[in-house]
Length: 605
Image (cartoon, rainbow, N blue to C red; front, top):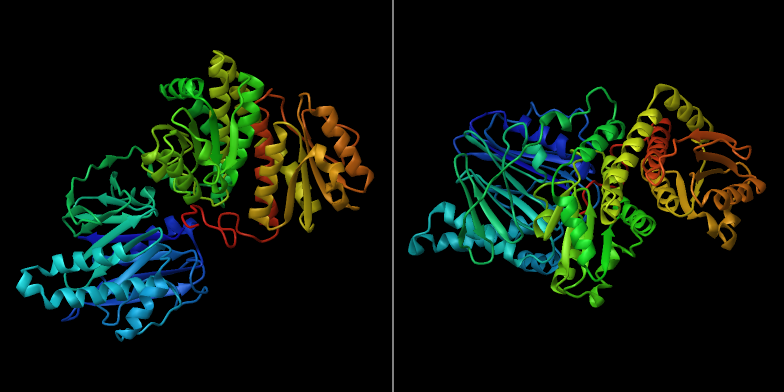
């Protein structure tokens, strides 16, 4: 969840560099933020910390000392409330070490009791503070033996951090700074961490794209690895044994520009508008991965789509797509539940995991359990070098570009597009699949026109004060109804629920009362008549009917047109849902990029 960033190099504005890095990573958590710099202007270097509860906003760090060595953190709270004191970084008793942390130390209570008996003083409620005091205690013990063992100060620092990290249970990534050696030690298990190698400077960050302003030479740390970083050295070790490893750096092809909002007021809106270009990129994808994944699906004895949140709804849509186009039965499970369903997997099984970040712990955990059963793993993932990307046997990159808004949009449509291509490819009709996606691309462009956006604005003005919104669909439109409801919920905080239209009469319709907005997806397929009947049933109970369809109907109180693109109609349809979520959020004074209580990459259970 949390964003962590560190800089060491030749520049003396490290605090500003780290602040910019945290702004880039703030979508990972925005409960609080903090920066620690080494004041090198004193006779004895000292760590100076500035940290605050709340979003970074227009924060400045001009009051921090000039330094070439700093680290920072933006928090999604787990242990301890959202307060200045609980914000990271945390210091040890002596002020010699500072730490930032992403994840949870599950056995912190046991370690804390030991440290209290040893005289350590704690000022926060966090599990993270336990880590820095344990490193301090380890350092103290090892330093006493340093002369006899002929260890250098650096070796003592590395060993103190390594033995502490090995004590932790749970999934964590840490970066520790040391005043004496003026170096970093970082380690990870589960939570993501990337190392950037620049010219006379080195950096660390939760997400690699935060490193782009400085370098494209990146090392994606694996689980159970520890790294030592100075201004001119990066050394990788096995955390459990301490053995040195060879670091193979990747050369990123990403552009810095894709991470900027440009002319848009929010990343969410920018990323909605990115979708025609994303579709174009997918249509131009000439890689062999689609053919490879087609072959894997054909050869498997049981294929399972797994994802969480928005990705889960893409998986559910995939079950309909493969059934309708390829006449294939593909199973679906929510990622957080799939780990309890792996007992039937065999080496003939194929698990296709869908994720934007590739770091969603529920999906990663399910994939690891599936691998233990011998199943083959394929990943449809947006982030090169992510944990899911690395641990999967086969990878298909989504080509959606960096997605920074917490509310996912373009990664979802990219998943749908690739699932449609794969299903058509299975029956040897990839041309038809691409033609339908091209139609969807044109339909998205029409939806993003000024006239259409004005119409959506008119609807938002009518419904933004509502406490409840209901969304219905059948067949392929059912997952789109679920996803539309999720966009509205997470962006605007209006309680929205998606339902299978046929389930209305089985209990759901009891919720409908006079004036409640009811959104109905009515595409030009076999579900149209039955879904229209559901809309009429809600209308009869006083519902305000919003029709999203290829043609108007008298039952609609408000009509939003969407072009008929056959099976690919789900893509422009969901874009309307995304826009509703965005504009409802803005109208209600919410920040659509940073919804309360949420973070972009869910790396804790």
